[in-house]
Image (cartoon, rainbow, N blue to C red; front, side, top):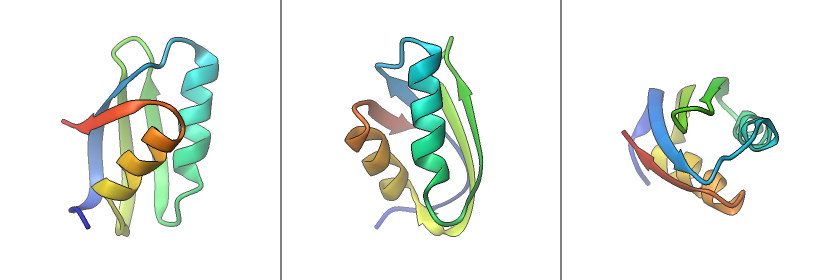
Length: 73
């Protein structure tokens, strides 16, 4: 199932514009338990703050379903 998140950072490959960043932010914000999504387009890093209901696996799955590759840093 993966570790619960708390605050975690992910390297996301494939984000090329502000539209991509907005898409990532929107999709991750839909996960129940996610409170903050910070997207740094220049570095490709996404930081997610969530409660114990959210796992790394859930976040990575959403990112991949949205069309990006992701790994937890």
